[in-house]
Length: 137
Image (cartoon, rainbow, N blue to C red; front, top):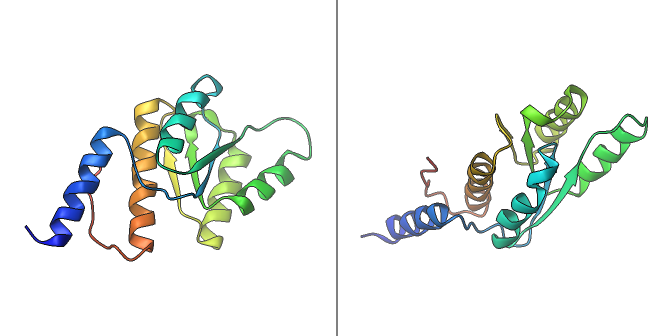
């Protein structure tokens, strides 16, 4: 087995175990279910990253706070079933123009969140120069 095949196999095993290599990155979760935040945090921290959250609120300073958090993030996760439209579009626009890697999740459940983190780990590996793809399904 070639070295690149071994590396892909090792990453696939890590995905199946639920651990990923995000090497001290800062991951922002925009939205999601507050009751699942401890689980989200566990998934991200096991990967070596730090997770912080944005929850929208009715105050007019909310969008400025989101902009500041986006500027601090290395990567972004956005579960679209639990986020308002303004926060979603602000996040999408910011990440597109800044080049910040992000994943949009169709659900807030923990298994979908874990797959999103796996996708971010894959993006991190590709950006780091390891271009061997890893299947995430």
